[in-house]
Length: 252
Image (cartoon, rainbow, N blue to C red; front, side):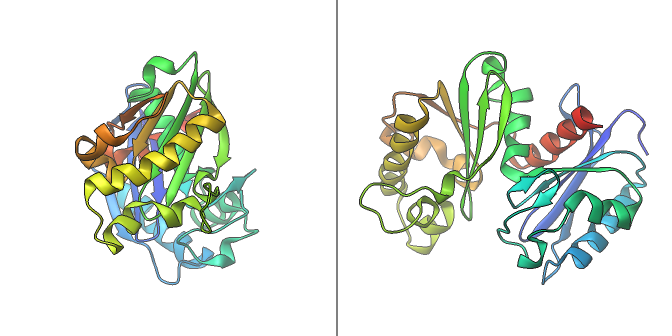
């Protein structure tokens, strides 16, 4: 174990990633390990994979874990890209019992948001302002911050847009773009409809875009016409791991 760091784990639908993090500097102290998410991703199988990751890092200490669900007091109250048997399951107790370590769980988009506010594109608003981070991947994840404090479990992908019969993440996401062979200009115009709605409802000072589609921000930036400034996230795939570790450092 590296005594200076805290382990952050990011659980996703296809991969479980983890690294030991320097939570003061926002850097990884070890190489980020990625293991395949077991299928089906039940509590028992995911816990076994998490234990394997921890053993590989030879880590003992508190663990932060970003989880693809609404997380309330350590309990999953929804399930996205993970087995529905997690609903009603205490994530912290399940993983803690398997590994013998203290776990601190939060929504995966919230974890990425914490990293972004602590070390990335939202740093200048860490003490003053309203910031919305939106991760654009298979669906739409969201994290809301007021004066640097997280307002957890913002299920922003579940809102309905005007004249649309599907939730926002079925209207626009990186998956929707790929499935429909959408051009970046078309993507930008559709994304603008969603972001304009978010802008009108939440009136943020800043909107940060993360996830897979943020890598091509330059290709559609000019089509975004919100009142709030829009920026691309800067921490790439490490954000979830970093944020989970920071969360654990505050909770332990």
